[in-house]
Length: 259
Image (cartoon, rainbow, N blue to C red; front, top):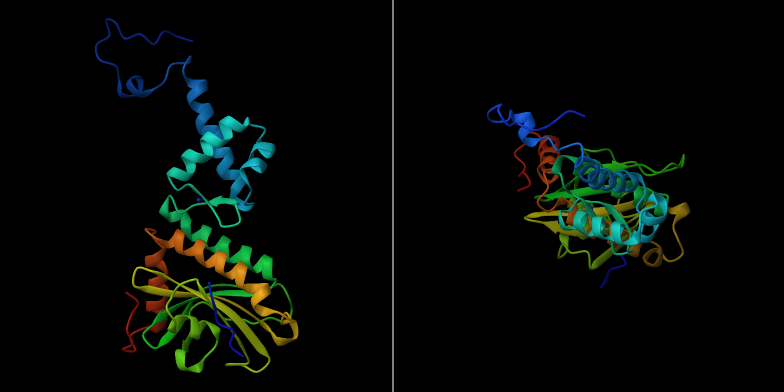
């Protein structure tokens, strides 16, 4: 079955002593220090709070005990510099800056989707006529679908991820298949494109746990996660990391590499 629908103390004076040392030149006075450190500390506290638990702006205020005006100003600044992002559900999450941290952030998106669906989640990339699994988080159930990082599957073998990768490559298309590749399994996928690379975010599960309405259960969460991943990977160092994973998986067998 295929269901396809559209839709981040002493004097500090230097008189008589010549030019200040580099440390003296950049060190704030004891009087100025508390205010400067306060802004940094509060920003760090916000980032720490959002590291594991996405929240609304109001929830950040309540959790940290800051005034609304202070919290909203800091949140606006952090969003401007892409330290945090707001998802389509209104929740604030860690963003793609700085780039090295985006690897952990991308995994957190997959883990959050697993929490919402209670099923295994994979991120696939299209390479020529194949697809390669570049990220994977498994369901906690004893009976679950497993696809290890580095798994290579021909697109002609089918499956919702294959259909998504062969489509227009935007999150507006939702695909669901049943027993397309492996008996007793099903999956739901949404594709997105970053540069010239097409990805498919896929939730896979045993047929025994298939929802009565697959599109109703999975389309929203998978699409939201795909849009967030697209935002995180744009201008991110992890895009190159994911391409390298696919390239290493393919090896030197003459297959084309992701661009």
